[in-house]
Length: 293
Image (cartoon, rainbow, N blue to C red; front, side):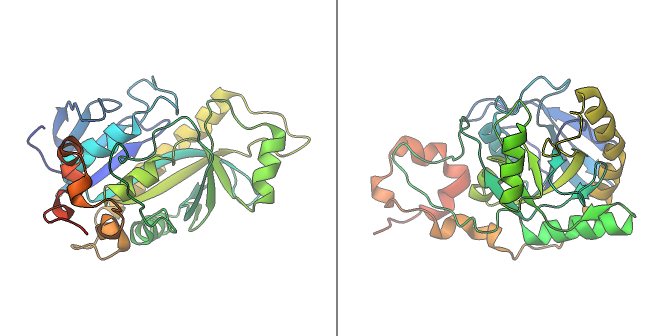
């Protein structure tokens, strides 16, 4: 692995393909046990803070939501020492109050994806992470307060439905999500949030609302170029929120994310295949020093 460290990671979504203001930049290539990440990871300083930036869809938006190598992305960021991970996502609003141009810090997730590897585990090792609160409440709170200070139209909570895509929702699907009291719908928060929890990384999302999805009977579907225009207008605000938020992070983490795997591993150490122990040492090596009963 490249010899570099960053305590904070940023995964840029649609429209955010770089992190302006980074100094002493290095572009790092990775090859993880789960393949290559979406693109090179740019590591640099934002003021005095070390940042690792990764464009989720690759530069130029080459990867669809289903093609994103989520496991490789999280593993590579973990190997850099990332403890706090800020995700930027584009979403549709499922209620009138979540207007195009608004930002949402989701606190809950409904995962409807179906074709994505969503765990680092299996093949001889079983792990069940606690996932009742899929987004780190500490990091989420910091992002919301940063947005408030900057005068952004930002919501502190929201239930996010993650769909497979790449097609947008049908009208029936959109109305179904509303019947569940969901607030926003996107394509990339899952399995990203779950993998970050397995890697014991504090993960939170800044979700930019680009449209009202398709639940309104009379509304015309928005063209992709209109959606992208709204998204790009959000990007500058999101960058400023990130720049402020990284200065507000505590020196030490004390949330459940820090030790999520401590109570998650169900397989006794003596039964875990040696190749799996080696493959997952970065994630769980500290928990496999002695045999489990």
